[in-house]
Length: 69
Image 1 (spheres, rainbow, N blue to C red):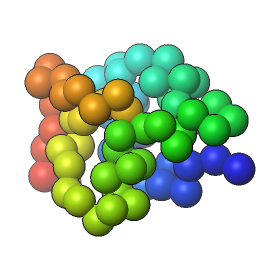
Image 2: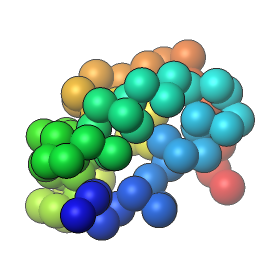
Image 3: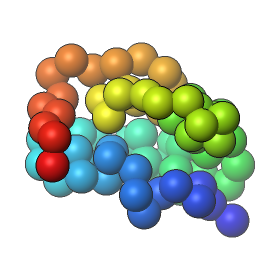
Image 4: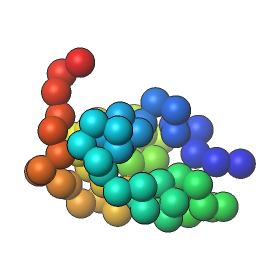
C-alpha cells in the first residue's frame, strides 16, 4: 500500500514543472511505510492546510514555483 494522496499531491506537478528531485518520491511516496512519516500526509489526514511547496520532511522550498492553477 502507498500514500492515498499520491495522485493529487502537488509535489508530482512540481517534479515535472521545476525539476523537483525524485528522491523525495523514492524516500517517502514509493517506500513501503515511509509515507506515514511524510509531514504533508500527516497534515492532510488532520485536515490542516499546508503550502504546496512543503516537502515531505516538513521544510519549505521557497525556490519552488507555486501558482494558483
